[in-house]
Amino acid sequence: MEKFNNMFEQVVLLGIIPILGGSRNLTTAVITTVILILTAIVLRLLSRLLNQDSLAGAHWVLFLAVGISLSYIAYLFSAFLYPQVYQHSGMYLLLIGISPLTYYGCKLNVSFADLWKRFNIFFLTIVAVSFFRELIGFGSILGRSFFEVGFAPLSSFQGAPGAFIILGTIWLIFRWIISANLLNESMLKIEEGTEIE
Image 1 (cartoon, rainbow, N blue to C red):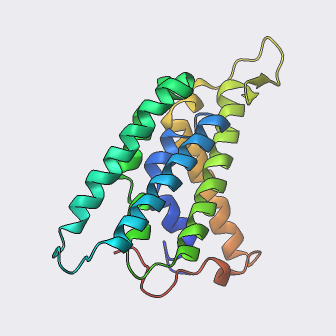
Image 2 (image 1 turned 45 degrees about the vertical axis):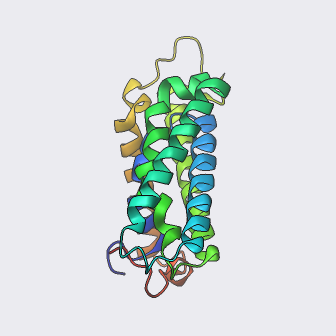
Image 3 (image 1 turned 30 degrees about the horizontal axis):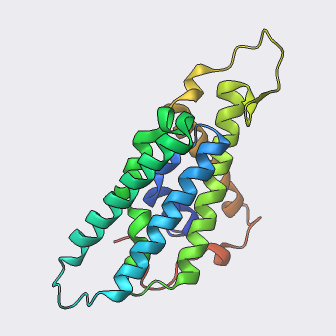
């Protein structure tokens, strides 16, 4: 298996900023995923409405402007609807607007089914990272504490470095599963013409 030549690794690379910042807890992970998916779908619809050839490559500037605007609107809504998410991960909600995974569906050779597979992989990855990050870093799941009063959570897992350690561990486990042939590699094979360029 070539390095970074499957959907899981492609999604991790393209969506690393929202995964690291939006995985503080399970609630934040779900909100981050919903914002990313809604922004990506609006951008995909916009990309299908525009005649990209007539814009001579300038269509990406328009996509970026719309993507950043949508992520800013989501940022403002999160401040009103979910103040805890806004307080701890608001900046990362803004960064969804510059995340490459958000714009992946704008490529003309990417089908909606391929894009949806990547959304599912993103969701499963961010939920796994947030589950372990909340459990190890805060000693709770969905705000419910599972440890005795004297338990001191590992505070290094409360920030983005802890998310990076957990994401790296998940990636290593994934690589081991592939190398041990416990998972069919063709299930995550990248479609022709949709590689990271």
